[in-house]
Length: 94
Image (cartoon, rainbow, N blue to C red; front, side):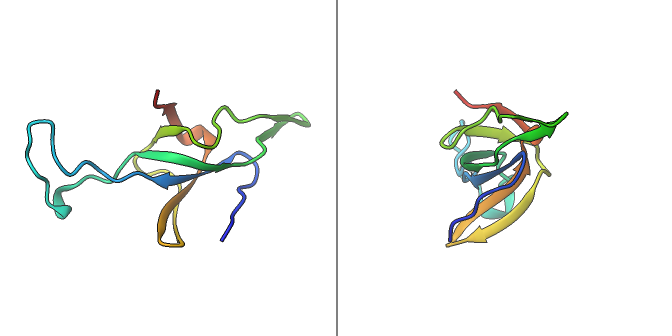
């Protein structure tokens, strides 16, 4: 299924949380925190302000950080997706 976000919405594919800490400790499924990184799958046309469309700063393929409780979760074609507003994206991972 193909989905195109509207306005300033962004669709992210949620990246999996780390299974092993930097110290080498393997984390069980129940101890993992909700991931806060995602890969941009699709981007809307941007936010409309004063009759002008402001283009989004992110593009498809970017890996981004987002707020812990941001967006709406979806599951499409066995993929965990998240629909969020661009303002909820904290930064692009370089």
